Image 1 (cartoon, helix red, strand yellow):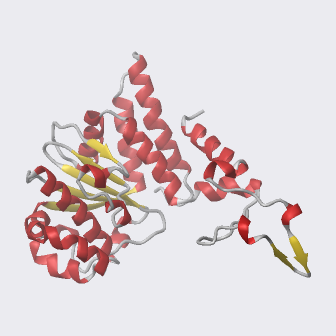
Image 2: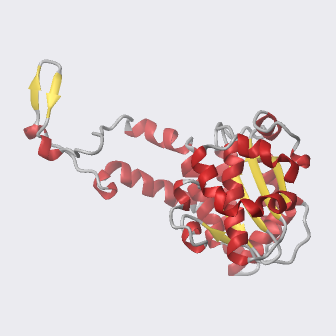
Image 3: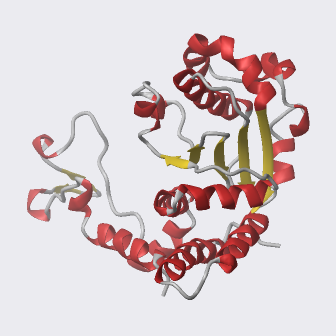
Length: 281
């Protein structure tokens, strides 16, 4: 049994116990039924929000929730939140064919606070954002969703805020992982990935929403150099899975530590293998 089973068990418990999500049921004793309509007391509703009902059956819940990009992102985030930074660096070096001795720190929802912009998460929500001494990497995970120039601009914002915070110029990578990576990027960007640089800044800004442009304005002076330092790449889920398998195989079985990390990576790898939208080759 993979460790990820514990995560799915926790979600199932939330399905059966919605009060843990801050939801409260309205018992039938409070319903007023007239024909095909039901009304409930206003005092028992949220005047500023919606009403909720259970729209899936217990039988279909597991299948439905496992297809969601957000739930897989949780497992990805948990995995790299647990991994030592040196091993995270090794994984992405192998994926990107880089040779760097570094330790990459994983950032989640706290990224904005770390960079001094508390509400950054309202604009930019990286699936993975890793910072090191020698380089920084952002990861965008895709199954059936598209990308856009606006999303690229959001990642530029995160990179620019990190650069402003550290006052350190270094190589940057934005890595997409998707079932059909070439189709994903060709449909989103009017330039080849290997041509990204300062010359593309007007095009990218032209595709960004006003809310993103407003946040970019204070760091606009950093963007030309940032784009010159940025490498945008796209990989299939098959390639990423192969990288995890290679790193997992290199870890020693002789020690408890080695077996633990192998199990951690193995759980994430199995989730990729079984994800219905990964479309492995």
